Length: 321
Ligand code: DGY
Image (cartoon, rainbow, N blue to C red; front, side, top):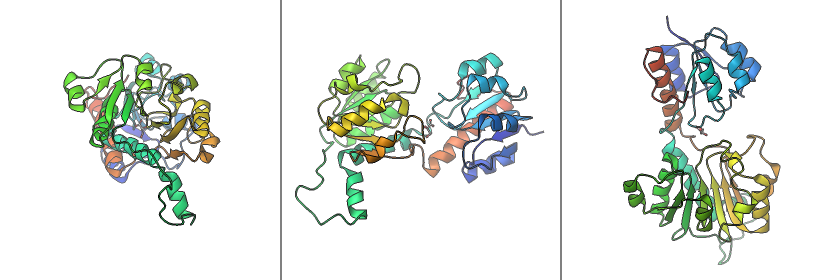
């Protein structure tokens, strides 16, 4: 008998086809994330769940999962939506999808950096609204990233991939991480380690956030820390919206203390702080970090690899609980 798998969101075709082949799979027909009550009801009789970051596996939800559920595989690298302790307490295995979205997310970090520094949003608007009156020597002057210092807050896989790309743009790489990275990679990137976030902020002409969400990073970029950034710095976020104090960032963008921000993630997505919509020096994307067909397929396959290993009696490679 094939294991019974509940898949909570519509996934790329190739992923669903593999799931349908190897599992007795139930596919969600909802376009939007399902509510906790609906998910709990749907989970009944299933051995495993393939969820996404929109499914909040809080302690209260995990406690109410049917006894049949032995594993939760999330279609994401981030797993702040899963209460790992609650899973452990119930003996439920949980897995994520690291590595496979590193390049796609680093690409988006560069896209945001360039889009913000070159005022791409304002330029786009000018063309679309026919406000563009032709080439002008002083129109929409941005900031060139070549020769600027990139500060990476968090230097895991995505931070390093972003650094590699930024180095090709002639940027000087600085980073803060819990510990310094492998000296060989540090050397390859020509990267300078900062033992404190504060020291990093002081040299970050462009600050790119790459730390996970959680109590340690919640509201990290607040008004006090923004003041440490060089004048007219640029802030890029492909990590999680909760790392930013929206009040502080919006006021620094409005006052011109910061040149611009490029944001792919927001607190409370998709209900972002509405003030962002009218801040013209912000370049905004709807959480597209991993949104390529190749990457989303790879994420699905990685989640299925983890499920396969578990149901074949082996240890899943990407175990988080
Ligand atoms: C993740 O995997 O955590 C991303 O945010 C989804 O793109």
